[in-house]
Length: 421
Image 1 (cartoon, rainbow, N blue to C red):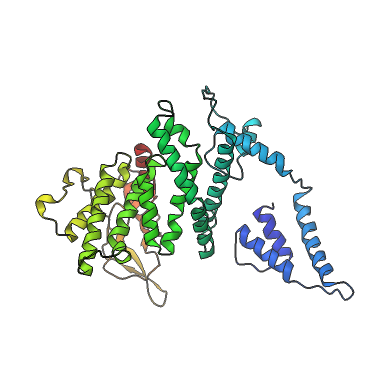
Image 2 (cartoon, rainbow, N blue to C red; image 1 turned 90 degrees about the vertical axis):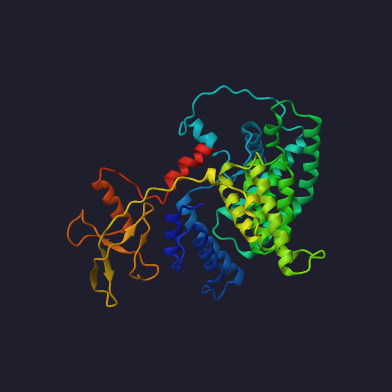
């Protein structure tokens, strides 16, 4: 419950040497210190001494937080469920109610809008409870993969176990939803919307997230099986189909030949060619799939060209994507004076001309030490001023009437992605 600065102050008072800067590492160091420290307690028992240490830390914490109140879990669970039903959330966070509180106290303001909603989102209470339980599992997996750094092998195994646990239920729900689709159970236009509140929607995302630990454990055959099942269903998470096609084709091109029986094929080369043809067909299916987003087409096209060359497909049968090629970018050449750091760390200048493209990547014939950024003379700031290559290029554009930002293409990607989506 302490803020990061408060936690650092507590660790400093306890004279705990910790290398980390985040709360998790500081908390672990404090716990370890509390468990390992011994006190000069000749008369007391060992357990009593440990209790005294814990009481000492608790007292120090309460001095910073003040009185604390623990909410009863039953009302808390009730409010969380009301939030889930009323706001129809498809994600679970530990701060689900925060936005409601901020809106009530006018710390967040939203435009007025007309609410038009049907009454029956969840067909039964059991479906609601399963949907809620699935969201909690999803949050647990997301918390491991996205919020706590690189996951350990133990945590990856936890994700794998969770995915295997929900897999049978996911398959059963897929059959039910497919039956609803074929029997037109949903009214026109409601099907895709209502499916977002099916436990199968959440389970599909959990299965998709479970592909990552399978890749890390090099269980490529099982990963390929799950990708095939994900692509065989068209009801849930259609926006991810392009990524599934990409990964499936990669596995078929590089790994599946060694993991499957040869079935009469005479040589290793014949087995590899067989799976490369399957990978080629997977890429073609991806381009033919109307749910495969346009942003995945370029990579699928590149893999098709690569596979056709490897399979020596005759020219008249090869795919031609020439009409889709982008126009070549305009090149600009910028010259500057690079500052060369000699072995004895005495500054020197290398007046060699260096070509710099629009993406601000420097290419130089003279070698520089790996990992150390190159430094250049900053002519706008006067004699002796130095700058990095990005600033040097931005100075050139300023001299020609432009104003720019160094963002590694992030602004352009954001604009293009927003337009496509």
